[in-house]
Image 1 (tube, rainbow, N blue to C red):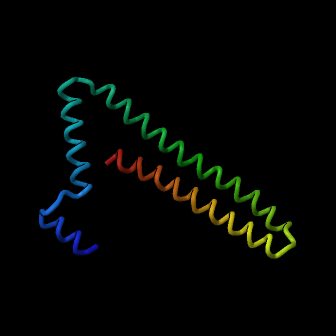
Image 2: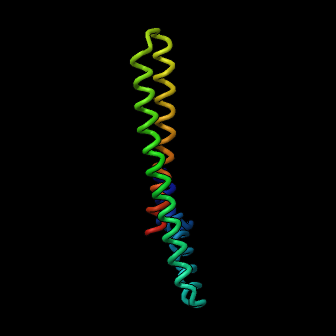
Length: 112
């Protein structure tokens, strides 16, 4: 990984940040040239709002699911059943946290 970073720093390839920066520059130039700045701002605002809404929805659902699974776990008496429920809860929680993280990364990338 370090060799790849050092190669890209030496100018032997385009990094993803440079690619994104170039794409943003092209897009902003197009918006200025076509005088479509209002639509561009609305599109960005709508995308950021949607990503933020999806991230908070995922976290809210995770809270509800965790509360319900916790009640089920406490009432389970068979040890193998408790282990299975714990694994299910952990896998659901990991999936939803990763999903929320990806939505928030989308917002971060749109605003920078």
